[in-house]
Image 1 (cartoon, rainbow, N blue to C red):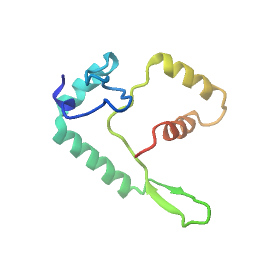
Image 2: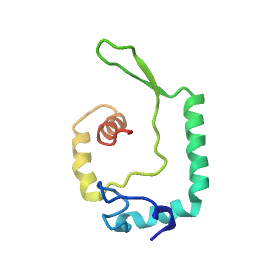
Image 3: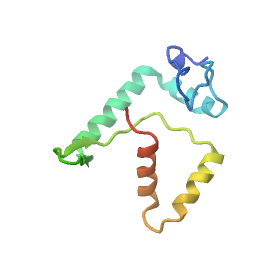
Amino acid sequence: MVNLWKKYDSKKTFDEYLNSENKLRRQAVIISHILERHGIKKLNEIEKNCASTISARGINFRVYESGKKINEKKWPLDIIPRIILKKDWSKVSLSFRAYSFCNVCNLLIYLFFIFPKS
């Protein structure tokens, strides 16, 4: 078990990195070792710097709710990469090819709906 994951509980939900026994999934081993080399302190520092940069550069989006005030929110950035298996990505990427405009924008919108920030 990689030290980074010892206190992490993945038993109640599906996790891309760990199985229900808190063991790294095969596809997570390499990125997990890279993250562990940085350590928690460095990862927290990187995340803080990312949040600061997003704030300083005004990278925001607006949330519109019917009959309510418009909310301005900072762009969420998760510094821990999402793992998408090749077989799953193949299915997802087919849908993006159907669009002739801004495939990168489509991907970002899709990921926001699939992986909302809690």
